[in-house]
Image (tube, rainbow, N blue to C red; front, side):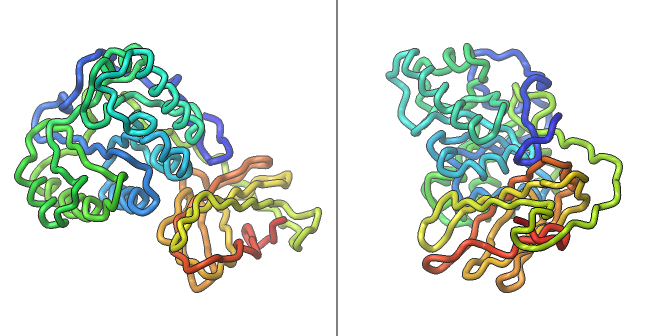
Length: 349
């Protein structure tokens, strides 16, 4: 696959699907102690990145049923979900009850949602559709006609009304059954209890012999495939200096969303030189913020100094190539844009 601005290209061309039917899937379709985790109503800047961190730590993949308007608000988080190998699911544009909608109305909504997802994640594969509130109406046939398997659930712990982390853990342990598709939420409200419960339950279940997989009808090779790194070549010695036409990197910064006490931002780093930049490290100054989560690189912070090391799957920036870094941060009041960007020690323009 070719590298694109966010580091990976997503394509459905090479993704093999099971035959799509209007039947609502509620199980993994696999024998034994298997379960599939599914999360509705995101992306959510407060909890989705934390959930992704938990899943990454425990090496578990899941299905994220995305709310279209939320994807438009937080596209970088939608990209992170896909980049980390999770499966995307259409969960409608505005979470409306479609039970009494016409087929044409449903199709228009599902097409708009797919478009919103693919604007954030180019060429995204979207193998599932889940109806808001489980109010299906004519949507199973419409979704199947569009190539999306209707995705239901076998187990709901009602985390949409947070009862406390310990209670969610109790419900999960009490209700889990072999092959269950489990309905959880990462959006639509404060989902920190869900994140904490998942963090506790995954290692418990693994110790009991449970396997985490996808619902029946999943693609055979879900998630993006990293482009193999080219044979390393020596990193050129760039000409540093603010505004210097000899600079070999360019940085663009964008505020994606600002909610007063916190923010989501995106930083696009481009190799404007004529040679590859290997094992890149970006450093910059950013006062007044505390990075709570960053993606597309290994983030660290010391006071106002931020360092982002290249991820293993995108350690080299070829000439003309860009990588988009995303982050969520806590802050107080207005903050100035980050400054003093350097890439492998060279000042960027």
